[in-house]
Image 1: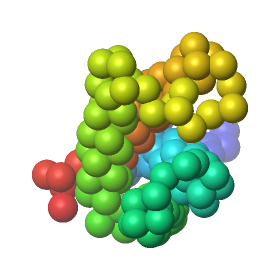
Image 2: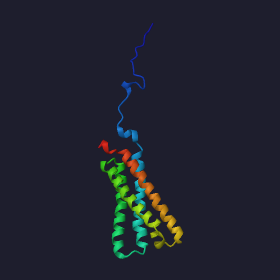
Image 3: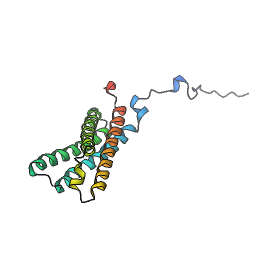
Image 4: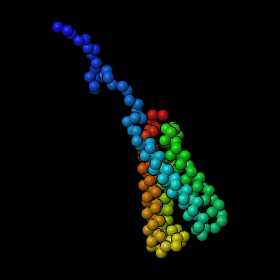
Length: 162
């Protein structure tokens, strides 16, 4: 009778066959999703700064400050998106700061609009009610974008892991 020698291999799932998985692998898609969302918010902010603000009837002094600040903020959103994709340590913090500032500005815009000063109706060619509704919708949508981006960026790169 012939015997065949076999080597003992550990069964799948046994402790000797497992390799340690890095902590970031458990949250694989959240960095990319945060980069997508913060990049989308950045394109909207750049569009507002480069296209919408110059067409409003604001005075020159306000425009000389608002346009560069808005466009620079939009570019910072895109820098944060690239940093999230490249797994840079500073990108989650930058995303959180941009989201906090953006949410603050959007909440201020909501308060101004809801108290009757309505900046959207004054600068739009649409009827006042429609311009107000679209402006409120944009502000609420941007708040949601920034909340989602900050949540997924900070979940992908927790502060305690640095």
